[in-house]
Image 1 (tube, rainbow, N blue to C red):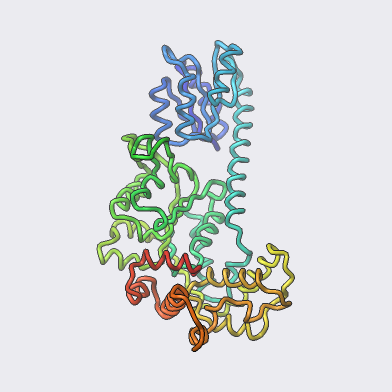
Image 2: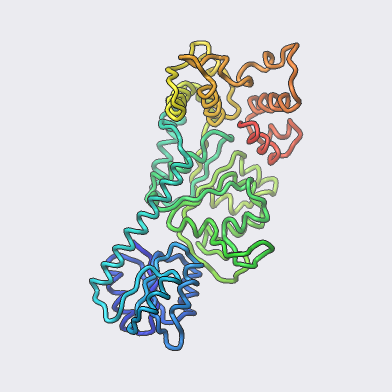
Amino acid sequence: MLQILIVDDEPNIRKTLSYCLSAEGHGVTAVNSLSEAILESSRQSFDMAFVDLKLGNENGMDLIPILLSHSSRVKIVVITAHATIESAVEAMRKGACDYITKPFTPEQVRLITRQIAKIRELETEIDTLKESMQQLEPENLFQSKSVSMQRLIETARKAADSEAIILLQGESGTGKSILAKAIHQWSKRAGKPMATVNCPAVPSELLESELFGHAKGAFTGAVKDNPGRIAACEGGTLFLDEIGDMALALQAKLLRFIQEKEYERLGEAKLRKADVRILAASNIDLSERVSSGNFREDLFYRLNVITLKIPPLRERKEDIMALATSFLAYFCQVNHKTISGFSSATESLLADYGWPGNVRELRNCIERAVILGCNPLIEIADLPGNILPVAENTRSGDLLSLARIEELHIRKVLAQTPSLQQAAEILGIDQATLWRKRKTFGL
């Protein structure tokens, strides 16, 4: 189904087009002037627009670049009773994708709409494929021998069919972003885009623009309109990773969007609408953030509809070797290697290690071992040094850099603490700094 805008000053044309397109199952909005068209386009995203060239004293040609500035993917079909080669060329130059003359038949309208629906479907598939290529993951990440993990996946599959907000909790590296992508693919919105915003990775002063977009000139450096991530995933899913780090002022605006499905771009006073499902993730206990005054209680309750807590890898040791084997097969294929498995000593070491970086750290470890390994099996020597006991890493005679000692100590503290917040307190640094160091060390 397409969302279609009709712009024509003749009531009969609007009525005929609306009836024809609605009968095909499309959502239709019909207006009779440029100002109304601009208003509707600013409030919601359209897949297609029929634009008359003569709108009383106004020129429909002027509307084409405005509609495209609101949504670069909208397909504009010019309709006119005064067709000329010059006007057709000018319309295409401005960005229209087709041109039909009055009087036209319902079959002509249905044919061109079906063609554009197919184009939009292909564009969505291409976007999905690009996302998949960028986020290639080995298979079987959600096949678990752990009872708690099995229950979590079962709940996630059930919740995916709903429109409910889902809050994913768990330590960094447990696979929250991967599970979010899976929930989107299991949902009815799978054919629509999914956007991910990592809240700590975007400076707080820019995060609002990243989410809601901004108008040209809204602030220094805003040289063009930015539709924002919400508009980019219309009809799909927005995943807010590490939402606990979002500033309080922006939390209020997010709450408004969740409740009303309305928002405003920076530098604009126009209300916009969007049909977007929210998934959120946090590696800290949001209830503690609420208690400390760093997270809005009302937003927490809106997010906490369905909460899925992913257990750390150390609490599901029965999955370690299954995951390691899956990663091994994947990275052997990617790197054209023929390593058949792990030595018994390596298996014991992998199973006994605490994995403070969870599944992400295991993945990075196996990738490194495959790239550097030159034996039929992965040996202990192929593993990164931090996998070995800390005492062995720092035995007498080793000369280690300060950065290496810092990395080993952070790994040790993370392995022995239940939360990122507690680890940061022990280390004497804030959580944002610890998050950056974990990213640097690949934890």
